[in-house]
Length: 455
Ligand code: UD1
Ligand code: CA
Image (cartoon, rainbow, N blue to C red; front, top):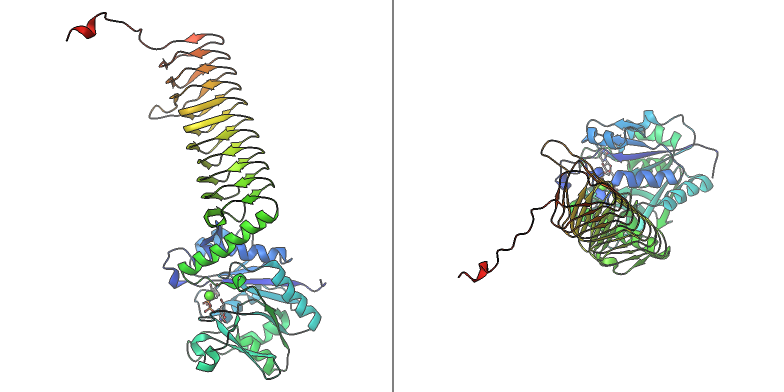
């Protein structure tokens, strides 16, 4: 767009009192992603790779989230948005070019909007450019005051506004692009508000006009993009807006979302076309889902990898992997490091943890498989339990290719069941069963004839 440098600042030092939380406001999550990450992502996609994040309240938590990959500036005392930017000025390199300023509590801003502001600054040569939007309910936001000729004169905060100014519905969503040299010279001149004692960033707009500079407004039409989060209810509302955007993007890319109202998919989830998501399903974290799958209803998936043509029905998956053609549910619980091979079948009330299951194996009912390697084309009977924990240590179980584990087998680990070996139903297996053999570990049945007739 330009050869001039474009830098960025994100304000995230405020406490967010109304959140009533020990967590700093900008770390609260919207669809599984901390708000600050969403704003950083939008800036980075607009070409601002290392925006300076201003931290203050809860700064240790904030630094943990962003400190290792982004420059940060500290605002010790929260004395207003202008003061926050003052704290970041030294981190902005040189005087050339532009600086985009956004707030960490307006999480849904779009890359295209940031690009539009930068484009406007470059093409008009304005000293300051700000986004504006007409809000259905402007309560709480700074109002845009325009001159008779329609140009932006300044921004009046709700707390400082007259009744007439409060009637203005065009609001300041707090996204700006300034010439860096202008910001550096005018911001230190802003005086604290007589009403609140805070140094307002918005005053820079007025100072630009007073010093004969030009201010341009980019009027946006999507109010939802600028929903600010000041309390938990606004957090829910922003999450809902974002959720619908995610679902719509997926639907437009070829994923069927049967019921958007009851479907929750995180911002970092990837789903390939021709997969169907059934109602009451939550997919979170960095989950990746292939094509031709059917997921849900009533399913919860986090940080899992699902290959093509997989069916997951009323189940719970956390850090699990399912290869193509495999299926699970209803009521399967695939815990971290559960890995199902191709065409594996996992049925009801089966829990699998830290185990790999070879292609074509069936584990159809009421089973716990933990710390195990199961071969391919094996059959694990109903009620099989791997006793992987002796109260002190975890032990592994190995089950070979084509093995047949009889119903209600208790496998006391460490133990190995060889290829094509069998165990008798109801066995407690404490020793290895060699390949092609049958292991029987139960007392022999005795029949007492006529016994039942005694009474
Ligand atoms: C601000 C704008 C208002 C706009 C609204 C949009 C000013 C004076 N007002 O008001 O015109 O309509 O955003 O959402 O700029 N922050 C700091 N340090 C501080 C104070 C705030 O880093 O000392 C950060 C907060 O963490 C937050 C952002 O700046 O991310 C906005 O602060 P907030 O107090 O929420 O400002 P608003 O009253 O919403
Ligand atoms: Ca705010």
